[in-house]
Length: 208
Image 1 (cartoon, rainbow, N blue to C red):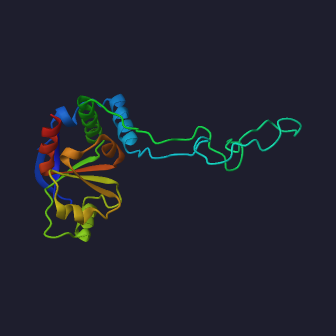
Image 2: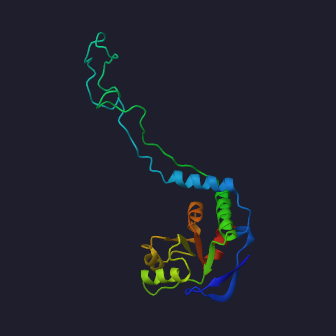
Image 3: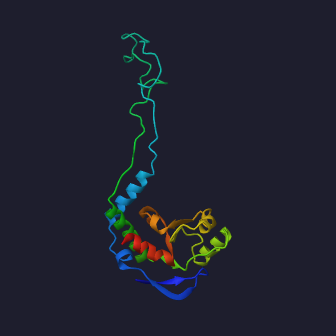
């Protein structure tokens, strides 16, 4: 699959780049996509929720009313969840929600997501970005030129660039990622994937 390379003004450079079918042209595997997204979301959970059950509440266990003749149910402890100030019944406790997927499954999921974006026309390639200094206004201007001013976009660079990162970190609809750190959830959650020209080869090398 060949795709035009755009410049930062949103115009075609007259050049095109080949997107390998082995990465950008496979048949998306829906079940693998589901597994990868489920794993990512589960791993974002802190698992720190905790509750005080009746064994953790510091209240008297002295029988506070007689067993019979009150017209109510039997009760022998103020720790009972039925009473105000008592412990919570079956409340949450800290736990680990971490899930794991095989490396080959993760790779297939990312290939499926990339192929789905390419097939739906939601993938663009722009020439390598270059900033002399962190300039958010310039970063926003580039997105606007590419027609991505109000579009949820993931911008992929071949490696970490502090100037580019600082230029775009405050742009609410844009997220900057390096090629080796792409994950399936972010690929599926964006409306447009914007690849810099050099990042295409980096992605291919990572997923091949």
